[in-house]
Image (cartoon, rainbow, N blue to C red):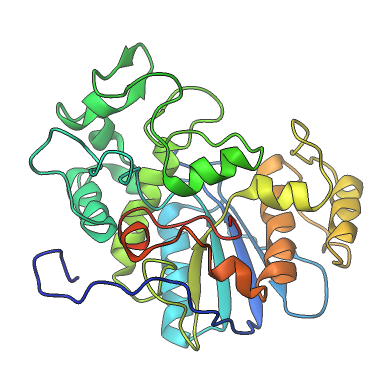
Length: 307
């Protein structure tokens, strides 16, 4: 992959009003759990213009490697699909001018960060990232159980620019450097970075890459935004039965979902988010956030639909 010293041209600001139509929409509820088949992994797909979303079954349950293999297949076949990943594909950078302030070897952009995370965690099974948060230098920036690094900072921890925008809109994003509590997203994000690195550029990841004219593309998903759009009030964003899910889908203009083998909050998040992506993906404004400069796109990325 091209690194920061390889002479690559700087990315252009992602403000073009280019949009495209997709034939399929996928939402992946992610998990950073350090096990072979995390219970929190769920994949749902909605077809353009017809039918309700469908939860994709995987014998024995999904693994991160199985999701990576599935996305590689989508790349190889040129699938016309928008894929939403419920994780943060980069750490905060803009606020401090670095992912890891004070460390001379801190990566300069998101792709270098993905490569570093995958290298540090190379011996971790199941594409986990335990070695990253246990590293003597890197752990200084994370809040862990019974230990808070001296560079974590105060309060909720550092946020990316798009997460600051989420907070201004009334959402409650969690810092990727926080690894404590039910709402922590750090482990999911780090394991997701390993998967993005191993995709090796086979699928463009917006906005690190421009929106391609064809083939699959990955965007960052925040499932709570989909839940709010479906009329689910703050604090009650988790659905755990078929009837509640279909009521929410109706608000999004979607037909009822196909019967699902599971109705935990991970499955319903994926099903609802796939339908939501189908409903909003053609809005040009969502692809052109005013604050999304080339620098932000290269270092932090952006949550799709945050403006």
